[in-house]
Image 1 (cartoon, one colour):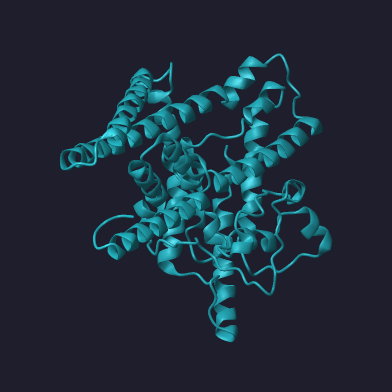
Image 2 (cartoon, rainbow, N blue to C red):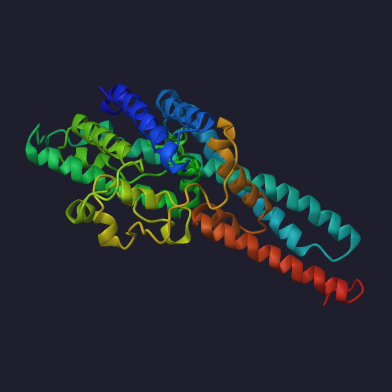
Length: 375
């Protein structure tokens, strides 16, 4: 039984209490970004429901896992063929002469490379993510290490809880620092409001990520049920920190736990708060690995994305970063850029866009200043 799903009545009841408290506060202090707004709340709840009921992982597992799924070999062959075609198209485009005929050939080659690049990245990415999920699956690792069983002991619970929280920190950090992972997680940060409903705004595309293998705990004797319960407890804990109705909890709690104050900073789009405070239950990992940032009164948190999408359309909320990422891949002219747009951070992509626009502006200025002749 998934305890994080069983806790749904607690989620809804807490949201109702928070909503009433926020309305009361607004009558005295005025509106804030924490207030519930019906379209935003509906979008968050809908994404939460979809994340729980869409059987994407099972479907992909049956169909495309390399060596296991019905279409696994087709997926690999498609990726390889797309890489070859795209590489050839890149060379044709690069070697086309600066003539009218050469320009037409270059345009056609770029179009082929655009489609081929996206196909290659998508197919190879799906093969890697589904393959990694299969190989690190908790039940599979438990079966391989079944002669070890730590039972239902405090040691087993301790390994499960600490191990899950440690893995969660790194998974969460990677979701902010690798664009392909950010495309999954951006859903959770897409709201410009911050209340308990925001905790339920979860992605449906987790199957498209590569995760720290928590299944290794099962290999050393931690029962799969304990790992599942640790995951659920971690998620339930994180629900209550999505609020600004709770201030700072004192120096001891703030030093050890991931508190509402720390998590408010995590959801900030302010430069100071970007990619900080990735912990689950404890903030210790952030302090150890240099990603901690305290919420500051002189820099109020601005919730949302650095470039907000301004929509409650569920499809766009779930897919907008994938759309932008694959568009960048399609517009790239070499494999270095294609892979960078997928594997480097979203900040790198935004900086590259600004660099490209700046260079395009300089080229246009040079063209204009020389009466139609490039310098």
